[in-house]
Length: 170
Image (cartoon, rainbow, N blue to C red; front, side):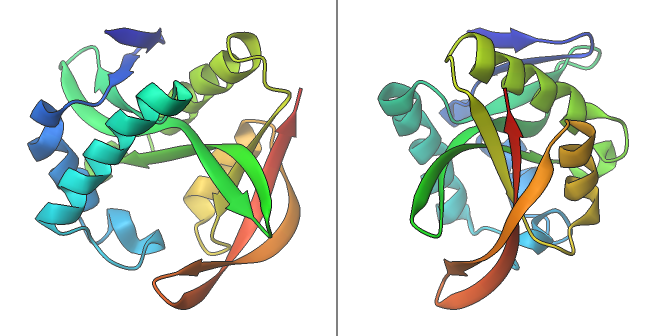
């Protein structure tokens, strides 16, 4: 089922059949540098399963981004429940196959997700948690109209990782 459409893309729920395509994204060390490790096969399965659970619980999560011209899954973009310094947010996230970087796909899909968040879910703000050195993601967030509202430390696998909290308020 298609959730969102843009001029070049459509977004739909992830499904177990997407495993190989998702592996090509989440197991690429260059793509996953912000996580500091590529996912194992088991972690990819768990990640897809978690997204499917969240669709039922929250009504949103990462969606598969399909390029219309090729009918290929090129990335994932979606709305995700996040937390920073004990405050809960709905954030935007985007992860793409490296060969599709620099073509405006993250911005295009994220723009559609933000419209969905404001107009369908009736949220009044969207956030993004981005590592300071992730300049490409920071540029996407800024192009979306988001601005940094604070710096915080995110704990991941027993490590403290600095992040910036970007925010867009309706």
